[in-house]
Image (cartoon, rainbow over all chains, first blue to last red; front, side):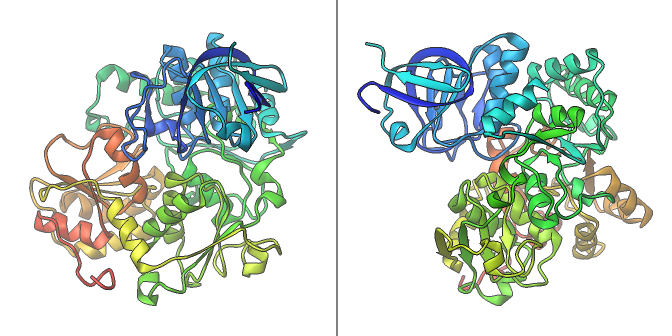
Length: 142
Length: 398
């Protein structure tokens, strides 16, 4: 990430701030994430057990089942979901989950795609995500 | 429509296109959000605009007593299924809509959800669908529109990674058990790329391609594959790659396959608790094989044997007298749902054997089952013997 700021493309607009958590491998929310506890439950995922609640979730993309939209939306409804998603590859299934949660419950979980270099540079620490209608900015608050 | 447009923006599409049919997966209860969304549509007077089939729900509506989960969750699952029917969807309740009589034709744009249905429609039928999921599936069905992006576009359908099968013995290439294992390997290695398989026999069956696609869509995000000389967009390797050089090439070896096969099993117990086949939903041809394998023997007491299928296939096996024969042999035919998405297998100790890589992939986390992946013949013989049986001849070099 260039200094403390990166620009990306907005899939779902919104504003969020929180401690980042970086998943090294794609995650299927359906079957791989429990919306009751907010934890990764896929036993084959290298970060099984990690809790995503209120984190700015940095991950390459979703994976597998097309029911992941529901699981993400249900987690946002329950307040166990991540605050924002920073993806490396666009993932329409996760984007729809966040859009539906915004439509039904007015709860925002911005979804942003970053370039490979910027995405790789993201580490743990607090991140602020400001996703406008088209472009998004991710920064480390000073 | 707002959601369809939001999706179009997320996908970078600048226009929408007409879709001829939809397959909806949102009818499986995932939580309160499933009902909130569907009932908002029902209350708003929405109706589907195009022929729309439904994926599995939480209950076997023909045998609701088989549901072993929380009563209230079961009732919500049923309410959700009813909501989707009242939106005008057909109560097909199957993850294999491609086994219904009317299926999309080559080149037709559709909006299908459920990862195995998506990969089958794109790869085996040559229809065009993006990876649609819950919510967007019914929005596309109501509007009849979908973003002109992703796999709807020819340039996104070209193969990017080639898997060569020349190192795999010919005998293994004809075995049903190869395909879920190969699919799991392909999904792991291909991720989001479009894989091309070179060297599958021209006689590869639809059921084998179904198992391959379902596995690749579970272990990876594969929504389209090409099999040279087998699937309709791959008359040649050149055609499958759209005339370009592949970015990646993989030589598949028997050793890789055996390793993947072993990784599909989580169970260490030597006790057999149940068998579950029919993920994706069993076809008529698969029932025919099952009848043949059972050869009038019975499932051993203490072992539960489930086969999941759609009602359309159920009627056909009923007409042939196979349903009665299966029930007498101790086999339970499940419709409308699947044994790994809903609590149905009685609790107990021991492994559940399955011939499905998809089932093996999801069941441990979903229903807490210990899994042993095996061929259909191994599953059936084990169920009859009441103890795990492996075919020593099946995999070369063992």
